[in-house]
Length: 79
Image 1 (tube, rainbow, N blue to C red):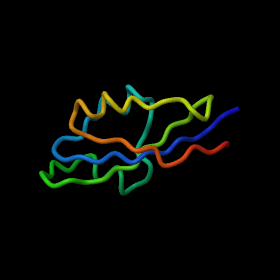
Image 2: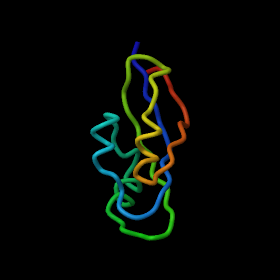
Image 3: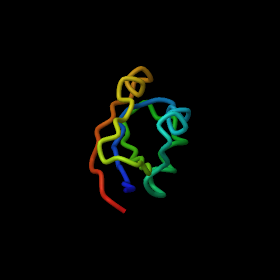
């Protein structure tokens, strides 16, 4: 089976672009793409999505946190 997982990452400063590669995810929508390039000191939220083989494949929340960003999984749906 194949699933799409969606998560919300929240943080400020430079977005950790390497995390997109590390968690094999991509910006969830055009607004998320815009938020990647902002260097805002204020907190912002970015949705990310990825395609996975199992519904419960874990995100690397600790690694996101090491960059100062918090990750919260929103959903996992079968596609």
